[in-house]
Amino acid sequence: MKVYPKIPRYDHPVVPSSFFERDDLTLLEKFDGSAFRFTLYDERYTGAYPEPVVDAADGDGSLVFGTRQTIRGSHCDSLETIDGALHRAVRCLRAGIDRDALRAAHDEFNGPLIVYAENLVYSTLDYGYGDTPLPVLVGFDVLPYAEIETMTPPGNPYEETFEGFLDREAAWDLFERIALSAPPELSFVPATVLGRPPRGFDPDTYTVPHSSLADAVRAEGVVIRSDEAGRRVKCVRERFEELNREQFGTPPSAAESGAEYVVATYCTAARIREQVRSIVVEEGREFGLHLNDDLYPRVVEDIWAEHWPELMQLDVSFTPADVYPLVAKRCITELRTMQTNAELNDADPTTLWRHLE
Image 1 (cartoon, one colour):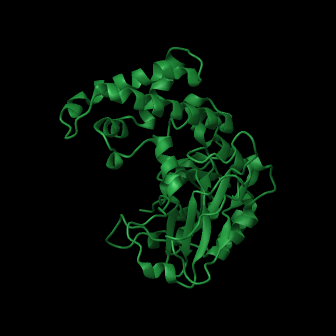
Image 2 (cartoon, rainbow, N blue to C red):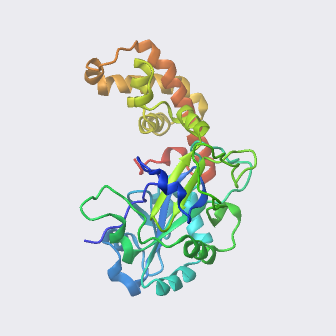
Image 3 (cartoon, one colour):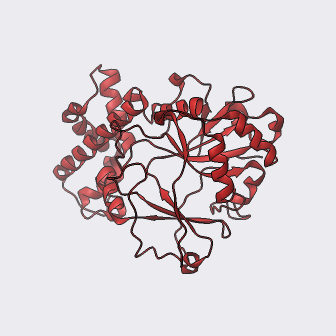
């Protein structure tokens, strides 16, 4: 059975020091957004596509798109049927991608291609969303369908490689060819190439530069790429990880108190959004940051109601009163994120990530 591969992760649990000494390393800016991919449905190669792509396509020439693990639809679909967090990306597919150029590339590579990109929605870094027109999709890799089998080594379906992907020059050439001239807010661009380390790369001493998207914002990190080794390694600056914790909360493994552990484990973004939708959709209240006064107590109550037996069996002790301010902080942060991305995608905030969870 043909599969439509998920987006390979760029971080590896163990990276041998010899990797950073390779002669073919290239440094790319690591952008902070959401994983995205698309492919052109070309009837000349119908047999090359897995069933989910064929089902999602709206005829020859459809751009079928997805997130990290799942096909989400076609650029021909009505935005009303598409998750709000993807509206801007779909508009980019419609106005910023040259489908004829992508179809021509299919002939060069003996079949269709999957284009991997970062969907620039607000996550942790604020590149100036709302103030400066920014590109929508940032391309960073291309995989021919003919090479799908190579990216998962035989016998280990959980290990991912980049074997079979187009080399850096070929991928960037494709990005330039398929990118239509479009306003920034509808544009597709290739990831910024920062250069090649002259004598190897030392992740412990490297200083992450400012982002190519905003002079005042330091980039999330860099991706160290080796085509010969078939690897991509993500190097994230420490301050970004701190910002990420501030934005999304402390992970359970890093919790320093029982209350932090409870919030990290049970106060998920999905739980918060569910309560926001209930307040706005079912009760008819206007969306806004003011909702937090009622929102965070409801989120705490929802945690108690669903997980009380588990909470009573935890190996860590906590004071229930200490949970409330931590949940309030997470809720106001999530409300701000929803507000920013709703404006960015010109979408109803209650539709954001609704179908992605």
